[in-house]
Length: 317
Image 1 (cartoon, helix red, strand yellow):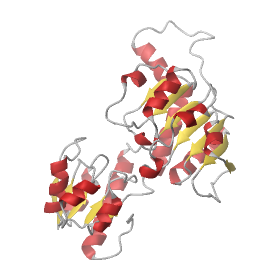
Image 2 (spheres, helix red, strand yellow):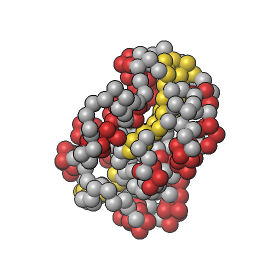
Image 3 (cartoon, one colour):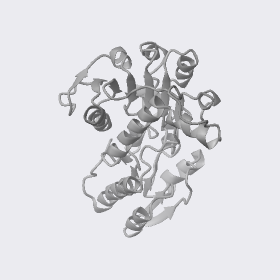
Image 4 (cartoon, one colour):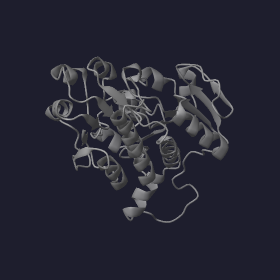
């Protein structure tokens, strides 16, 4: 079978794929498939391993009504860049890589909480610029994290991992909002309406992307936050109305934000970059070699199952 891997992968992933497939590798770090590339992928390959930014839309599937491709083995747990309904109509299965990303993504959430609350990025910038004048009792005072309340939006695998870290590591009270009832959040926690979760000291968004969560966090949600509240997004960029976030920050309605994802990434608004109370990371949520390797091998396992005619381990459509 001909396999297209759309982005550079860890060596172990490429080796595992080449052991079973005729592999074409786009040896690029971040360039996503163009519309012509997407159509060629469906037309010319038996299976494809796409990832974030490779937008297999309904229009792309409509333009290739009888695709040769029969599986998109997505590299990543999020698959909102693939129209899974259109894929199913075209006879193309879609899989993802759940579980492998949980701990690494939760770690980034805690990193953003600490960096933003304690002004760590701002402090490092001052030091690197040669502007640090020495220790002082009122220098760069931030927000205490231990014992505060965290509101988690989305209590799936990643949300629960964040809750464990916050409660067990920092003694934080956990409240959360989830579309469906969660019977076992893993730690003492209360399920509450969205507005109440937004009123926590720290708010962390951990919902999947897609039409159901597009702009879930907008002006109304930010209005429910307290002026000392800190907002963190490690989910998908378009879950947040970026214009509303910028307005809330500029008006001082919230104290700060920590972001690993952006609505139109890799474009990041200058307004966000200009604010010292905003921590900005370049989508590092799963950026650990062990994690990326595990994700890739999970995607390859889905591909091998398709090759062998066995049930797909992580099918989403």
